[in-house]
Image: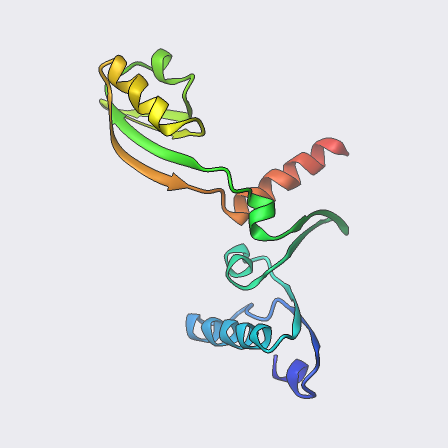
Length: 157
């Protein structure tokens, strides 16, 4: 990283700059990159650690076999559509399946992802004698998006 910055360039290319670093080293490199960003420098940051990409990058490009298959801001790529991780009691699989993706039952508790209207779902639960015990806002991670894009790209080939 130091070698790339020695001449105070306007554009910096960093290929896996955090690879092999301990947590303190990773933090320090991340802070250097964010400082460059604040200074108005352009940083091309290549990493397989997508959580680092989420923290650092304004725009993201995803390559598969040398082909750019997706590009945009984090919000453009992941969307702003909200979904919820919901857990609850009551109701049957037949009653809940139309509403929840990835529905699983653990004893008398169910868990699933709701991509539909939350107030409408809560009303529906009351109508079938069920109730939600936990509701968490969920958003797809960049890693999940990446995997989906790679899978979709394979189907095109």
